[in-house]
Length: 451
Image (cartoon, rainbow, N blue to C red; front, top):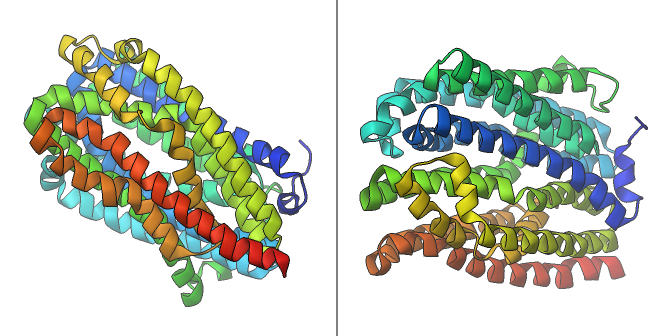
């Protein structure tokens, strides 16, 4: 493999560079999403449709704790990208060491809390009735591995900040493949049921951690830290926290959304509606993988060039990323509008779920073609270190617009109102993001580029 340097982020043509960064990111996200998708299919067919709902109840809790690692990773990686762009290796190394310390300490504390209050947390997130016991079994085992997952998610963002997207892709692929193999072994062969699904997931986290540890210890990484870098530095912690809070807030909103949706849908339609949401949610993670890949590829390019004061390249990166993202999103939209019934059949044979899920899926993805604008716009402000606008734009879609809508619309349209909230919030968030992004490019980037 040819030697890759972070300096390539400031020199190569934008279109070529974005593809080079985004394709591995997309493949990694695809494999990870396929893992979640196939895992859900295995669980639905080998354990039952209630098991799908049970996993959907646990996901927001485990993902929120893991997102602590991702938020520390994204916040620190923005700093690392800009530090490398400004040739400040000392700050990049200290930032990475602080990321590791923060991730390990904070996630372990949250896991202890999560295990102590297990019987209160699961019902609060919709784990009621027949869903409670399988959700509890899955939750307890998966939570043991969540600190490892958090370290993996943190490390993966740092690998991208170094300009090494292929290694970041491998870090996502190995555990995904491993999880599927362990699923077959623990669920199908040994018939461990929900416990088998949980141990397969936890085992996959360990595989990911081993690979990422190898990367940073090998000659492939530019960041060679030692024990002095692990000591917390207050200014660095503050900057990591302010930028990482954007990602954490986004995941917190996702977790709150799952909590609210599971409870609202359980009240409106019982286990069937919760399962339909779980299937639509899995497709939401899976189908948009190319757009998320573009966003992941965009972040280090924008951050590095902003740090290097190459503002015309930053503007070109924004425009190119949005064009690519919208094209891919339009293709995804057409596919999902045509085949939702066939997609649902992969997950379950339950007649009630087969009746409800396709319609829900069409509503969930109705505004997909424009979603790239919102994702890239929010990511831009995070990449250049502007925490407040990044936070507000990140919260627009699922927080500021979506959550009020799922309370208001069902009063007029019943369960249909819950599904209608998805495209309406997407459209409103995209309009607001487009306005602020245009204003930022005009007043900040173009002014600086002309100086």
